[in-house]
Image 1 (tube, helix red, strand yellow):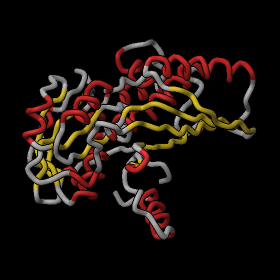
Image 2 (cartoon, rainbow, N blue to C red; image 1 turned 90 degrees about the vertical axis):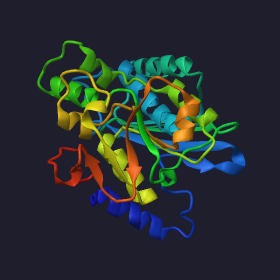
Image 3 (cartoon, rainbow, N blue to C red; image 1 turned 30 degrees about the horizontal axis):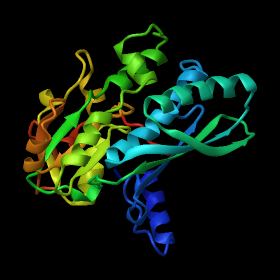
Length: 298
């Protein structure tokens, strides 16, 4: 995990006199009953208009931010949206139709934003979720012996992106997931409302192994899991299942008692947290396996 992004994050933490709110995808503002997250999408880095329309981009941009709130265990309620770049009436109209359809589906209110010019389309969304009546997750809450459970498929979006890059533009189950992420709203709600003990939860926006590494680093635990138990669509390659991002499935590390309380069939046990600070898949240390990951700077 030693990459440029981590080095930048360390610089930011060391530059702030109070960095206690940093460390998770969402900041938990307990005194305000809020979880807050912000995300940045840049043309040519996170999306390509050869593959995605402004309408689908609007839906996806809001969806990926909702996913961060769901991974915290909060209920998404408000968002602000800022747009920069070579904007025109047609783009803004179609983009906000996508935003609106997604917002209506999840009952989210758009509460403002900003517009500015620039060379490339840039989207910044700040999203807020209510924490009342919910047990909020943190990467640092995983404990040895906790169950590792997953909700949603892994690797489909990465497979779909590769198809699009290879000019296979016909819609299929892989390209559809890449362009229109499936969010695990019900699973998040059940965990946050039923779990009684501290737990860790992340989405797989940067891949399954990436999420496990972040939790491992924050909690000081490792993981052992079985590859064949990882939910994925038939035909997805191993490297995409493990390292492919943008599925927005949930990676959950919770006590066995809480797992039994939740009783959600789509939440699949694939392994456990362990004392040894390694990620073992079918007994093999994942650090020895070749990977292709999306890195924001490297």
